[in-house]
Image 1 (cartoon, one colour):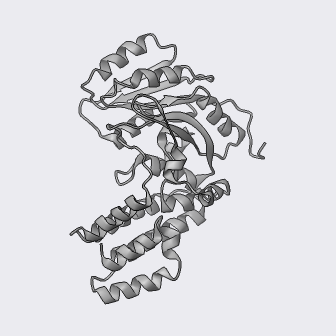
Image 2: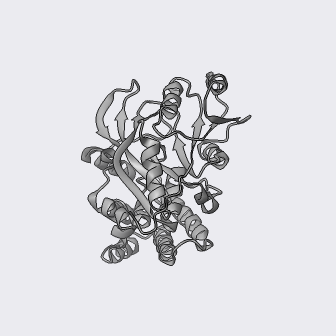
Image 3: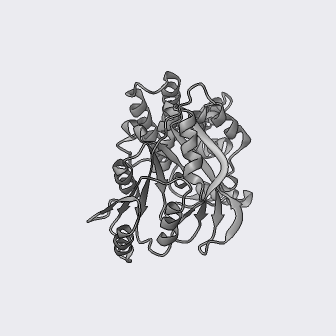
Length: 335
């Protein structure tokens, strides 16, 4: 047991967001109630569904043996704002994010809650998942497999270097994750520039350890209506994607400007947080400077290629880009 372990029993709550999800919602709700370790509070924030989801939720809540808070938005807030509303209302030590169309495996809450109880430094825990189709049939694939999580990334997270990993790309899927409610003090308000999973992961990693478990804890349903799904691209598909990017008429600057804006938001938030390690503030600053460099590259082809080549040999692309050589090529071609 870690030297920072605690024997305190922590309460667990669920933040579930819904929008026109009545088709799969009964399975998800049943799987939450079937946990081997019960949750104490379930918050459901519905983003103005029109398919009967709200009516189903009201009927379900009447007979549920757990405290339930139902909220219905008069007008749609959108994914991120609806999620923020849900997590802010959960009254429990540990908040479990929840999608409307998945199925939790019975030991999910017990497994993740135990991690937090064993080490009071841990800010967020996330796991692998079993990918299933719309009918719940196993696709023979896992979430980490489709995300192509590398052994290098796994070692970095285990070594408490998750923030460095997340500055390059997000590998945390909210549907598999839980976090300490105290994390909201630093994470809120959630910025629109980020997918909420990625934002919570970055803030959590900047403050304390992240634990990544290879054990699947949900059946992660893949269907045509997923707001956020997962699909591993083959080498041919990646080349096609790069070819499309290179041949599109719009220059790269729109993309790099977006990266610059998101990097600026992250650095500004961490800079004002006393709980964040100085090394992580420095990393966020370096990420911001790299984004500035990419956004300000010359439109002159010769000057542009020369600048990119000079930076590439320093290793900065490998440090800050998930696909460094692809970004080098795109930056040289301004595509």
